[in-house]
Image (cartoon, rainbow, N blue to C red; front, top):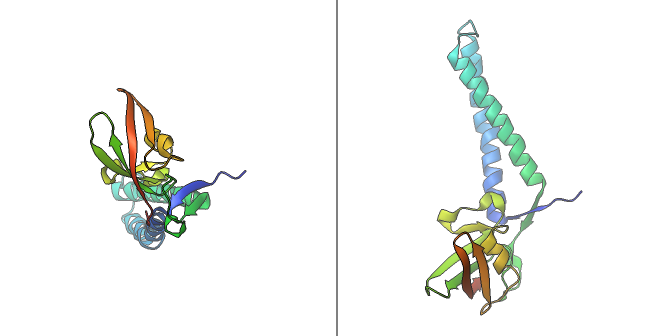
Length: 161
């Protein structure tokens, strides 16, 4: 079963940095906190011990989660792709709302990287799904809760997302 999930180079680097921190910084700190709490005696009523064990459980879960994501990642380096006008995973696209004439720019990224505040949207979002495969000048209709919204693709740029 080949369930590869697209991810940008930056997205992979961010996950690898978090994994490195969890394994080399957080784990040893938590192990030391557990050892220190054990030294205080009775573990049943030892809040520090239970808090450290909870943190250890969370950290180990996050390590497994990140390793799983990286194991299923298909890293796509958009900067190595030929320039073009077509909207694909990893590009930055500027669209204009045809009704209000307002423009907005989004970068299409993997699920784990999406952050609307940074204008990074998942390739699975309704807007990205409507845009992928289209070119500059094309008009797309995005089905939104408030109704259909029409956008014109104004610009497509490739870079390292």
